[in-house]
Image (cartoon, rainbow, N blue to C red; front, side, top):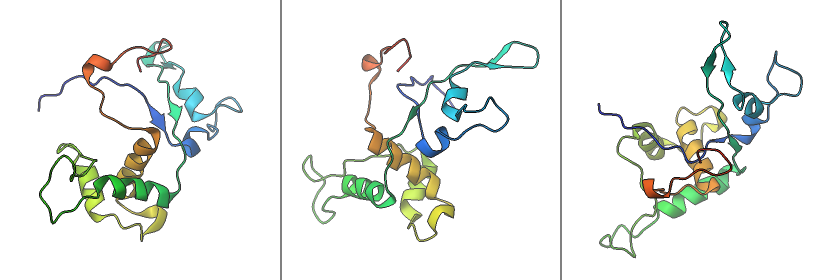
Length: 145
């Protein structure tokens, strides 16, 4: 498998998880704040980089599902054209997301096996996920967004 470096334009995190207080760390420290700090190993050396995350916009389950369905909707009885095509495409290498979109119904609630990839997609769509070509990657506020 030939892996190429990824250009990270933003990191988003579930706002509920990101704003949770981290047990055993200074009182009041959230997961988002902890991730912004360099991780220091027992030897005193940096073992992990600082990673800046933004809290993702919250979305109700129905709202996120509607976003996905609207982007996938097109008239399948007509030929695919610029005016009649889905507006959401998933890379073939994203097998978990493809499987989840084909099988997730929401009937199993918060514990569903395919819920997480669908939640990630909903979060990205609500955030404003879009294709960014290499020519548009630039620094913003001193961060590699």
